[in-house]
Image (cartoon, rainbow, N blue to C red; front, side, top):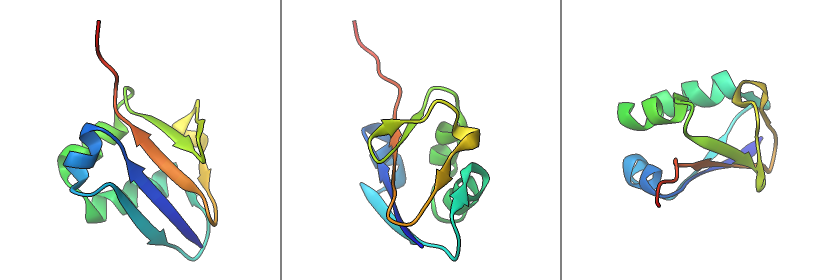
Length: 86
């Protein structure tokens, strides 16, 4: 299974790259994605992604419940940082 993780905004800076291609033997759930990030990325990025303010989207569609996501072959999982402004 091949998938792509995309880091947007300040999350890209924290990851040190705009995206990461991953390969797994089976679809990944949220716990698997967090485990993978823990192995390859900074603690700051991992902490941010675990937080409630970072949103995720699979193939452009926002995911309401991160705990219920399944990342399948060919999917793109984007991590969207919190927005601020006025």
